[in-house]
Length: 181
Image 1 (cartoon, rainbow, N blue to C red):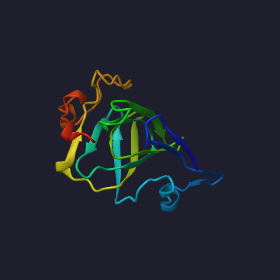
Image 2 (image 1 turned 135 degrees about the vertical axis):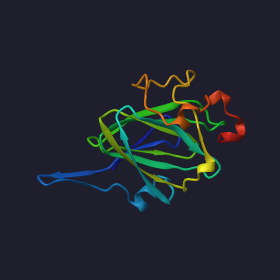
Image 3 (image 1 turned 180 degrees about the vertical axis):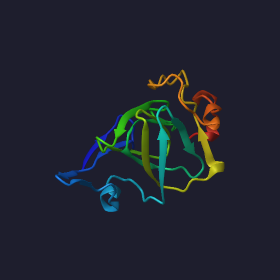
C-alpha cells in the first residue's frame, strides 16, 4: 500500500495495493498490523452509508469518546472533507478534501480531532468506514457544511441534508468545551 501524509497532522491517505486480472480485482481493505504501524488505532465499529446523489452528510464529530475513521467507497464517488477542530493545532479551522471512489480505491484515515463530512457525486454511493470508538448519539456534534469562514468548495449549491445537519452551528459559534483541546 502507498501512504500519503497530508498537510493536516494525523490525516493519512492510503492507497491499497490492487491485484487485478481477468476475473476482476482483489484488495486488502484493512490489515491490523500494517495499519497499527501507521499509528491508526484499533477499530471497534464498522458502518455503511448508502446515499443518493446530492446528499451531503456532515460535518460531524463526537465528544467525549471521539472517533477516528477509516473511510473508503465501494460504489460511486464522493467528495470527502476532514476539518481540523483541534483548538491547539497550527492547522485549526483548515480542511482537506479528496475524491473517494470505487474507481480509485483510495482510503482516508480521519483521526479524532477532526469533523468529517462528504457529499455524493454519483447517482448512488456506498461509503464504508471503520471507527475507533462506538457511536453515542448524545456525544454527536457538528459544524454547518456551508460555514462561510471555512470556504469549503462543495460542488453542490442545494444539497440534500438531514434536518439535524441543517441546524448545525458555524465553527466560530462552537464553545471550546465542544472542541478538541
